[in-house]
Image 1: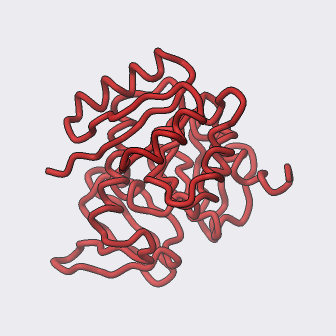
Image 2: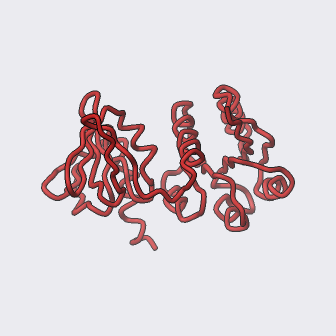
Length: 232
């Protein structure tokens, strides 16, 4: 079992303690250092090999995003923040795997860990496809062909440009495998490719001939994603 060496960077001791407890609980994370500012973290990264960086965005003097710009060989990075709008820029940076919104639950922490393990085991962070099992076959599906994913009981229905594929899987598992810069969860039962959204109005997303609902807990982040370019 691979043990990931990680550091936690946050200026709030309770936030550090939560992540330390989660790392201890999951048993595959070894916290090698904790830092309350970016300058300490940069020094640690020079001295200790690190696999994973938990990085608060809002830090005193030097922000987490500014810190990332100074790191050439970045460890797999998981951003932590209390504000969802700050997560929008996270995927512009190499090796930013995920972001965690505070307060961070253990379940959400584990989802981020799954993304790290997937990238480590895939042999590449640049995979352009996934394999989906259906009808006793494994279908190779390119990410660029996926229009949206729909939860259907114990199955999910993957709507592609060519076909619909039913596979026995949880939507949360597929969510962890899709590139987050291209896909967005809009409802507990739907994940949509940003490229194929025709328009968003009120509580619905129009994708081709489909009208999909927007869940209340997903609305703010959806609108922040689709309006990010307008904000400059």
